[in-house]
Image 1 (cartoon, rainbow over the protein chains, first blue to last red):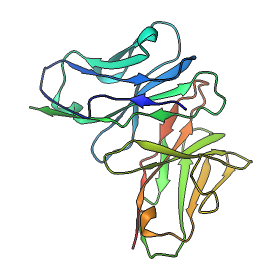
Image 2 (image 1 turned 30 degrees about the vertical axis):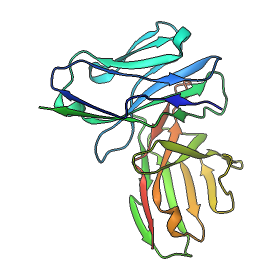
Image 3 (image 1 turned 90 degrees about the vertical axis):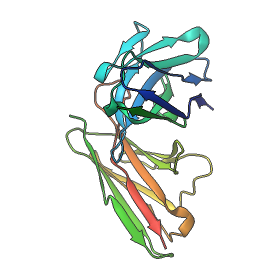
Length: 115
Length: 116
């Protein structure tokens, strides 16, 4: 079975600092990769996704992620965070070509941004 | 687009009763929906895959007789927690696969179940 690791459980930053959240997965075949965000009291929202093509993916709100196949990684980045980015961030993977489309989630990273 | 709703958002019930949670895709049709459970400060755990017009596929360790799933239409899936016990108290989240052919899942806001 797939496993997804998010190494940072809680990250605290000041506004304007740069952000990088790590995500590694275990599956050796073709994968589809996602980052979801959950703002306080809200539901999961899709930030960005990678299916194929350019391994550097740009998402909403200035976020981007880079797929590095050799490292089984899909790290999330933002050059300058804002207070409004405070949220829980989840990395998720599904096995490319899987007709079931099941997603495997990491345990999440809580990001707190101080104004 | 791609909005998913859940009802109710919160429910409190007595031990031994059954609770039904609805998941609807509001502006798209979803042949596949998923049900997750989220424990405090933990990730989402997939419970089952709900397929329109067929039986749900349950993940290992999830009791299908306890968590009944019905996907009666292309916009509605229901999860019924039967004979609920306090250990079933949790946050239940559904998702629906969008129509863009990329397997992207769109999530509902979740239902907080508390069993007394």
